[in-house]
Image 1 (cartoon, rainbow, N blue to C red):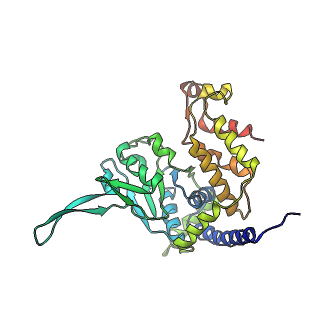
Image 2: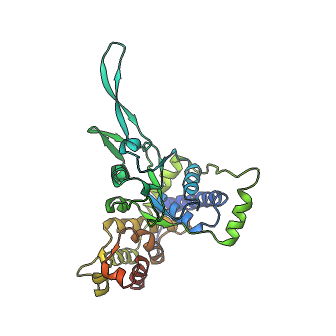
Image 3: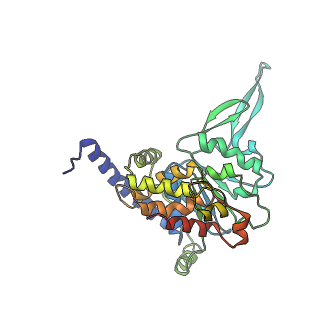
Length: 332
C-alpha cells in the first residue's frame, strides 16, 4: 500500500484548488469568445506552461480578442503592438534618448518599449519584416533584452501571444525558423460552428457587449505555473515524448518515409513543450498526472511550426498534418 507523505498531500490539495480556479477562468473566457473551445484550451495550456503561442487564422476570427480577454482574466499587464512592414525593432524594445539637464550635462536615458509587459499581443506578426520579428527572440527565450549593450529584464511572467494571417495572403513574411521555435504551440483558429456564430451574432450587436472580468492575479498565475512543473510524469509518458520527437527528425532513428519526406524536424524544445504542455493539460482536466493521450493531443500544435517537408513530399501531396498523424500512429 502506497504511503502519501505530507508534501505530496499538500501538492494534491494545491492542484485541486488550482483546478477550481482554472475552471472559473475557462467560464469567464467562454462568455466572451464563442465557438473556439480548442483554441482557448491550447492558449491556456501554453500560458500555464510558461510559454508563448502563435494563433493562426483568417482575419476576423477573434484571435486578438482571445489574447486581450485572456490577459484581463489572468490579471496580466497587457500591451499590444500592431505589426506593419515599417515597424522597427526599437518600436518594440525601446531605445536610448539623449537628455540634457539644466546644468548642460548630457546623458542617455533608456525609454522602454511595449515589450516590457506581462502579456505582449503581437498582432499580425507576419506583416513585419523578419528583422523586426527577430527583435522578440531574446525576450521570448531569456526574459530580457539588450539595448546599446545594456541588459534590461522584462517582467515576470512574460508571454507573447502572436496572431498570424495565413501565409498565402498578400503582404505577409514567413517567420524565421528560430522565431517559430520559440513559440510553444502553433494554434489554428478555425471558423466557428453555426450555433456559436449565432450566439456571437446576438451577443455582439446589441446595446451592450460583455467584457472580460479578472479571475486570477499575477501571483496566482505564477503559483499555478510553478505547480505545473511539480506534476509527476510517468516513464511511459516520457518515453512516448522522446520516441515521438526523435522519430520526427530525419536520421538513423527514423524510418524511410520520414527521411524521404521531412527536410528538418523538431528541436529539443519540442520535447520540453510536450512535457510541460502535457502537465498543464492534465491540470486543466483536473487530473493529477498526464497520460500518453495528452502527448498525442498536443503533437500537432507542437510540431506544425517545427517541421518542414521536403520538395518530394510536397510534390507527392503530403502535408505537415498528414505526416504528424503518421508519427502519432506509431505511439502505442
